[in-house]
Image (cartoon, rainbow, N blue to C red):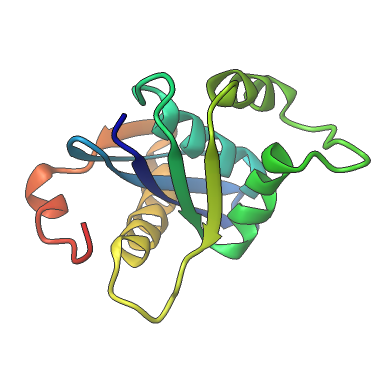
Length: 153
C-alpha cells in the first residue's frame, strides 16, 4: 500500500473568530483543499481540515502527517489520548477517530524555515481564514497548477 503524506495547517483570528484550514496530500497522486468558517476555534478548524484530508485516503494506507505546533497539539490527542480528554468538538473528534481507526500514522512538526509543502499549506490556511471572514463557510480544491509548483512533493 502506498504511504500517504499529509501537510495540514489551520489559521484562526481570535478577534473575529474566523478560521481557515488547508491540506496538501501526496500518495498515488497529489491533491489539496482549503476551507474555513466563521465563529469557530483553532481546534475546530484543525479538526475540520484534518477530517477533510482523511476523506478519500485508502483504507489501511499508512499516514505521515506534518502540522504546525498548535495544530499538532490538537492532533496528538489521537495518537496518545490525554488523561483528561478534550470536552469540545466531540462531533469532529468522533469522526476523526473513526477515520483513523486501525490506521498506522505518525505526526511531525513542520519546519517554518524551509520552502516545503508545509509552508505552502500554511499560506493557504491563512488565505482561507480571510476568505471565511468575508464570505462564511466554504471548501475548495487547491488548483493542480498551484500544487505542481510546490517544492518537495
